[in-house]
Image 1 (cartoon, rainbow, N blue to C red):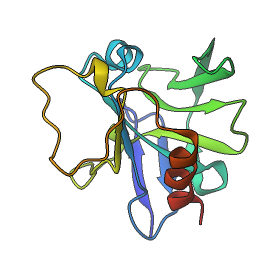
Image 2: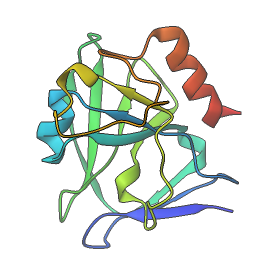
Image 3: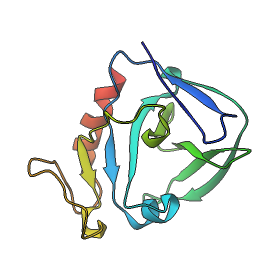
Image 4: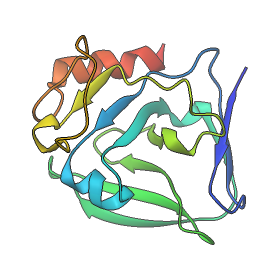
Length: 148
């Protein structure tokens, strides 16, 4: 089974090769709010080997808060941000889960940067949430959900 997604204009399409929907996390940082024009961004970290993409992408790179280069990959035509890669995590793609064709079943397993979350956004009472970045040990566990 796979999960399909793509950009707004249809020029870029991808398949995620997973039997079940990959675990995702919600980032409420100000960068994600600015880049999405929304309250947060939904991501899943997946192996590049399980992420098959067709179409022409453009990339732009910036140094992230960890001091490593993150490259954001967008459709060359409509500029929808599909995924990013980070030199500190070789072989992995950080997929924008809102680009899935059917994103109704996405339930983030973790919320991060909640200290900058919009005040009108409520989290479930049992949500795992962090005021800043996910602690490294927990981040590895979340990644492991999709790497097995």
